[in-house]
Length: 402
Image (cartoon, rainbow, N blue to C red; front, top):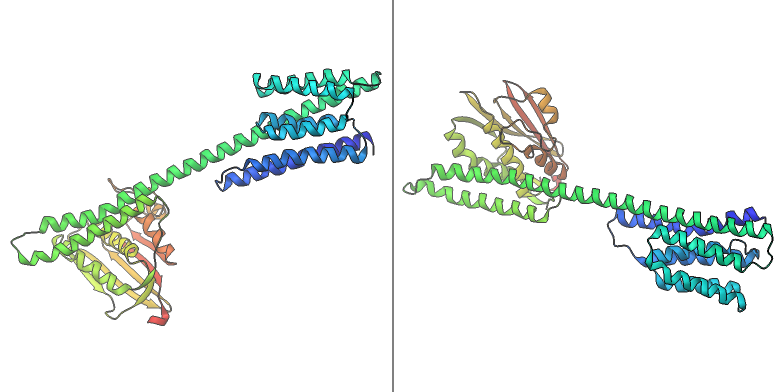
């Protein structure tokens, strides 16, 4: 094996375990797991043992100085047990003779000085000490050996800087990645806050409407109390989402979709009357079962009906709610003759935070879409300014129960 081939081989066996460790570090941080320093120890020991193996196998000790690269990394990483192991292997190379005493003094000097300097200065000082002591222990003083010693120490110095550069660069990238993750986490928290604020407004608005109409002297108004209690339960349910700070989850169960729609209509009936809105309701009276989250779908349909009511700007106000069965799905239509939505707005309506309302958050539609998609359904908006809006919701039904 030529000197150049030996040099390349030493490069490979030195850098390969370190690069593998950096890949592990990247993978580990991607999944936000705690770093295990044992893998750094394994990487440094692997580099050391592989270089040691190459030296023994090839019997070319010119580049034994490369053993100092993992030693430098061990010092800078404060892996003192690894420092002792690498020092021991280096001492083995020199054997038990007078040279070993000089080498022990050399590494003792390095150990005593490393804490007093930063990493850059330490690497430079290490290289200087190494060069001086290597020149001292040269057996044959000739120009070739001196030049070879200087070159090998210089290469050790460059490799040490290069590996430290890789470590520092990877740490910067990983820190940036962690910062982005933290930013995303904060954004999710803000999104959850906006979502919960928007969705809490709906049941509160319903409660307010019933309380405005409520007259404790009127016995017929007693039926509003259970409705108000149910709306308060919705608020408590929504607050659970806020405390979890996570993506909306559904808890599907077998439920009657027609019964849900009927319940929502019963709740809104007094509000529709107060606002003089004509309401056409055409839903099958028989049971129709789906696999869905009752509370989540209640959120969606309540929000859609509330939006239709708020969209009214005419004297002849009309809202239609009807359903159709097609193969294995139910299609639910919410149709109004309100102000309608502009073409540009309809294309952006599903985007979070996009709203045309003065006090809107732009999350009602976004959240509704998220819930319907979680039910493996679809939600479409069709609208024309001055004519009205039609919202089409499709959900799969349970064929075996219908």
